[in-house]
Length: 306
Ligand code: ATP
Image (cartoon, rainbow, N blue to C red; front, side, top):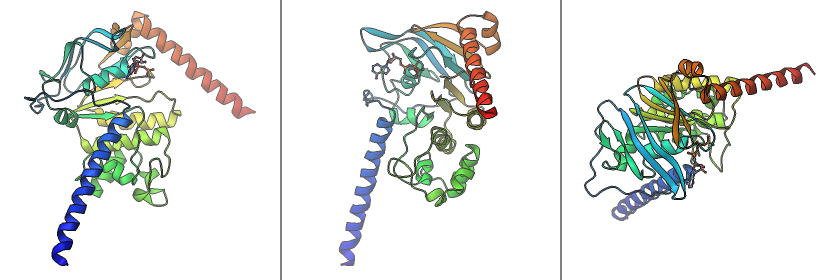
């Protein structure tokens, strides 16, 4: 019986591993709401990261041929720097992050990392080099520890705790009845948008990738949560090549360069201060957002004094 049970156990183990692997890949695509559309070239090589500099060169892209989304976009994210992409809703900001991650291929132009076209390298190596903090993280139906360890499966418990410190979510987790073993996801404890984003940040801290994509949540977070998340992101993006997809403008103030997208083209580019001086689209977006924040603050004060 002993002789038989070992191989059976082993087969069970392999089966579970494979099944889990497939589930994870499926979940990853589901959670990013895209299908696997691109394939590795037969001669694809692993991406060799030197410094992690990104270049978009004359990038044209459409999902549907009748509706171009990007019409010749060029910019670089120098190694270790932060570039933020802003623009009206639907301008194609998140599309830029999906193209860098190679969920889709560009129709014209190129995207390179340290001089290597993303179409020439294996998707596995590309995605290993990029940490993505998405807009809305869908968690696996498992413990919160599993969800964080996903960033680096061999991470120790101490590593996980340290990552949750950076992501400013450790005290929240420790206050849960089952702590790090609390079940989350569809069938477990439901986390708020800000909590989920901090789980994603902890995951990325563990993965420690040379390149980071931050696709900021569209939904408004309360000011304290937003400040906590911002502080965590500042730590994670320090000295990493970072592309911020900014749906709100609060995160972009310190970016090395801000790219303002409009109608599929770059309408303006520069630092926060330079763009405000220019008094164009960015300045008007900034002023409008400012007014909205002040109006909200005013409403809150009125409500509190009632
Ligand atoms: P927001 O700030 O509102 O999130 P965004 O600038 O990030 O907007 P994208 O998500 O990049 O915008 O989308 C750009 C355009 O492409 C939108 O008009 C959107 O409807 C369209 N689009 C996005 N994904 C797809 C898809 N999978 N198939 C077809 N069209 C898509």
